Amino acid sequence: MRTALLQSSGRPGSPAENLKVLDEAAGRAAAAGAGLLVAPEMFLTGYAIGDDIARLAEPADGDGADAVADIAGRHGLAVAYGYPERAGDTVHNSAQLISADGTRLANYRKTHLFGCYERDHFTPGERPVVQAELDGLRVGLMICYDVEFPENVRAHALAGTDLLLVPTAQMHPFQFVAESLVPVRAFENQMYVAYVNRVGAEGAFEFVGLSTLAGPDGVARTRAGRAEELVLADVDPAFLAASREANPYLKDRRPGLYGSLI
Image (tube, rainbow, N blue to C red):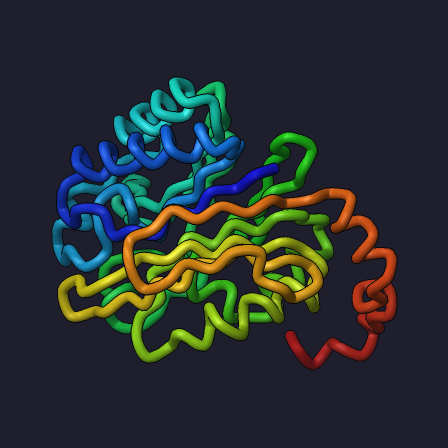
């Protein structure tokens, strides 16, 4: 499945403008043969928007989801995107996957919040593994800081995730996460990992770009630079199956030794 990574911060504070950016990217991705487009963390509204997070937050089935479903349907590809989710009196940093026919397939709430900014504005999720079936692949969702916890990604591996989507807002000086950690996560867990970042200055943050899709061999299939960019790469189920057969990590685990981890 050809997968497109939209590296962009959109227009912080303007969901309408961000939907236009997403629509344009979906058109380009579909024209290039992509079956899936992945946008960054909090793409629908912007990340560094302070108290506007609560004002712009909406339910998982809100107007933003309907608009993304329309984009997915018109261009004939699935779309994953980040947004602030309103659930009663709480707000979550969430990511949602919508199919090419507009069906909401999966919604994930970030479980590991990074820094005071996120802890001040969001409530952490409690469900570590969220998956959906898409074009014969088991697709999992995670957000940014979550992927830096090896237990999180290993849980996905044990649950059979083939392609892990990680909308992110990775900032300076932590670019080594995109450059080094993400390919290692893909290798040690025998999966594809699509890590899709914001880029440029936004409020007090400087996002570093470097979006990548890493394969189960630890090799980046594509990597963006430090500017707004749409990059594409293929997720190959046959290569994944062969890699899992050759790599013994998951088969050689000894869970009985790991009790101290919890």
